[in-house]
Image (tube, rainbow, N blue to C red):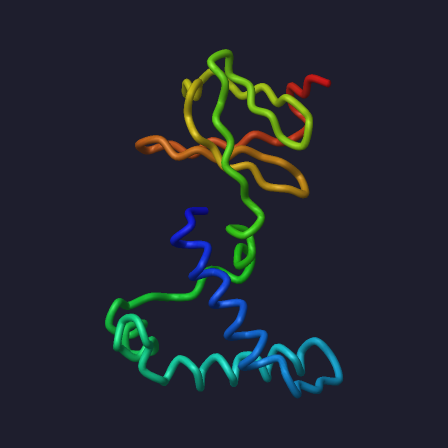
Length: 137
């Protein structure tokens, strides 16, 4: 995260903390989620300060679609690691050996708990490495 992006992330937290959270009362998680969605939909119909555009208009214009439900939170738990020259990466204090094909030495990969796996995109290839294989302790 850069210093520039850090401020944007903190601003988003403030918007929720001071714009949505005060005065919220809910009986269960579904109730809270429904209230949050209603609030987001209302907020996303207002002109954005930076872009000077309505976010929902941009969403339609750019033909965006939601993440698949089964992978909705996956991107928040991933961490980037560089594969060492001998094909290992370190995660949570453990070294994991990666397959030699495709060659991944020096590549940046994303590792994600709770079951760490490395995901690396190469032209035409996606590799996944389950946490239990080739573990060095």
